[in-house]
Amino acid sequence: MDAAFKALADPSRRQLLDRLRDRNGQTLRELCASLDMARQSVSKHLAVLEGAELVTTVRRGREKLHYLNAAPINAIAERWISRFDRDRANALADLKTALEQSPMNTESSADSSTFVYTTYIRTTPERLWQALTDPAFTRRYWGVSFGTDWAPGSPMTWTETGATTEDPEQVVLVHEPHRKLAYTWHTFSPQWAEANGIDEELRAKLATERRSQVTFDLEPEGDQVKLTVTHEFDRTGTLQSMCSQGWPAILSSLKTLLETGEPLA
Image (cartoon, rainbow, N blue to C red; front, side, top):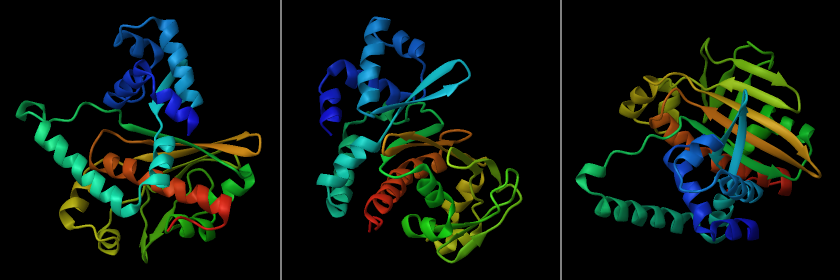
């Protein structure tokens, strides 16, 4: 947390985070173009933000894309803000935003359709891999279990709160044990919606969006494993918003389970 607070204390670094909030997944060149700052200075500030885990990077060909990483801020919130206080704080923040926004400013800015989250877990790649694939683990911190042989191209069933979802497009994309796992997201069936308290209007809206996919990258770092979760959406929308809010809680619970033996409540 010391590194996170130190990184956030600099106004130039906060400005960089604001630029990534406005449009996530930018290259160094794109960030330099939007700031009155020398390229070398931007590079140094990004290095500090990466060191504090407030920014994470993903390689796409020759490009290095920068993404906001919610893990350190989420850890701060988990430490000092209770579940009840968080809901109350969110409600007050929403009210403040609504009161301060002008009618011409109500549209949200164009965000990246990719969500990236990086966390460090004190465990082994083998143990983390088991936690990502074994239903005995996934049920504990996520409430979901998968039915598949994990071979690339194989179908997957998702079982959550008693409802099992099947679809030919629910498939494994990548399976490299202890290194990389990727699969498509589940179908929003009426059975899934009913089991999870989702009304038909919201379910129908989710069903209109193209199927997304999630990738887990595992990198050993000393006695820890760096886990990067990349969830790619066709566009910003309802699903992207829901998943972006849900992943930090799921991954915090996964980390807690592997490090303490018990998931978050």
